Image (spheres, rainbow, N blue to C red):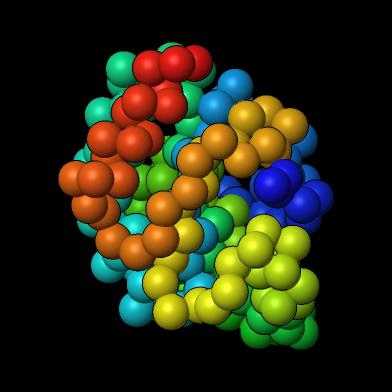
Length: 150
């Protein structure tokens, strides 16, 4: 599975095209589809921070994925997220994707939006690991095994 080419802006208002603008040789992606799923993302962030410190080639991203909207709605949503996230590093790594969610999910073989998806992809977007839902010790073990191979 390969991450499709998509565009969005981070919360520093910088335009990004993914996967080409991923900074890491390996990139840990948290993909929520609903606002309440931020809790599931948050359950992973301690591990993500730890892994970034242990693996200099790893970068973590939050990719809130929202159905495409008009410019005013996008501005309202983005500025609301910016207001709630004062940390510059978090703003840099949070890239909001406004797109056709069904097409995006189909491209990544994500059958539903009931939980977040966690992907590890290389610089070209090739998927190396996948988990679904909140943090679990089993998913951490599998992720660490893949990172140890890299």
